[in-house]
Image (cartoon, one colour):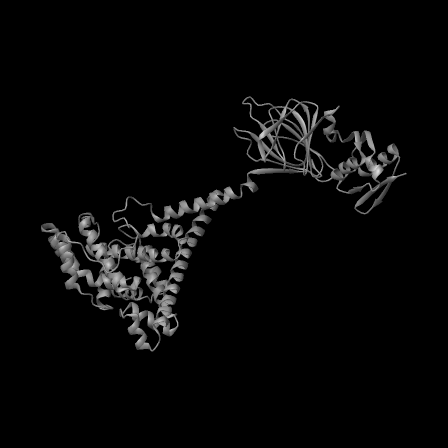
Length: 205
Length: 333
């Protein structure tokens, strides 16, 4: 596996655009699949991965990396996924924005701490569990729409329900997800508050 | 953790099946140098083994190559109205952010609850007075059933502010920095430099009697219109009054007579005498007879004991005193 990195490094030394193109060809599919676990829409996932590679080229990210290319790309995709989730959530409820800001900053740096990394995997687990807990019809509609990219009309025919019902199911699934994410962020915040708050009180007392 | 075992654990984690114990183990394992790289290496392999779909890498790569030549890279959806800084300037580490947030929270809570911890509160029960010296050397005598709130850590280098409920006699020391001394009551602020005066906020009436020096009376609702008092003056603001009533009193010091455990009256209607006793001892004192209530008394009573006060009152002014549980009724003989 390390060979990938050695090869990429050699390519970047001679021709950065060849290096970028090689990384793109090598990782585009993997990164799209990874992003899809968080954002649940192929289009959004592909846009996010595209953005990462474009910025990698435009900002000459390949000159600044301190990790492997692979780690850099995965971290960048994860950060963007997280920010996308936050954005989608804030669209629904502006008042959460300020509160989420402090959490999100942790996920915009080029490297992550072990805790951040595991927290990301936990986020995926939570998303999965939330979808698994949806009512069967709602879950099936949601997965068909998000994963198989089927238009609402097609899903409606396949499931024998109206287009309106498909829309209602999808919006219900999205709302449940939003609620879950919001609680996640709040819990993460409260956790930090209480731990450091207690420490501080102890120091003051 | 050795190779095959961590691989299984990471796969469980990526698949969303990891137990809290496994997550903790991964977190610890990641702290070892070089393991972060192994993590992403295995993540890439996991995504290859568990791919949900096969995006069209061929087309996308061609688009990306054109992008590097200067063409725009097409998107499926409009970009979110939301900017992510690609190369963020130095960001404080997470623990520092939380620390700062917590500190703000604690300070905020402290600020919101400052009324509880930043002030000392002196209280007198019914039937007792108390004399105290404040941080600036000023003396205050609190009449019975009164309270005074003062800053716990001294007055600092600004105005000296205290909050009074009930009645207090103030002997304010003049400071070298000419710092104002302000007594806040519900309806009236008394501002002074150095002087002696009595403030009483009883029975829906605020009364200030100035013995010496000069004070400014400010109504918080009309701060632009202060009233300057002269020595010997009494100023009264009753509930519902629009303006402050002033009159000269013969013996302004007597307003603070409670300091010597005396009740002093000068042409005071019996109804007000009753109020004063009521305020001091916390028993209701009623004067049902209207003519009697209007009768004006002049004199001094020792004020140590309710029974003594009532007996003296009865003898000196020819009153009948009827004691009932929790109240006293004054009647014509």
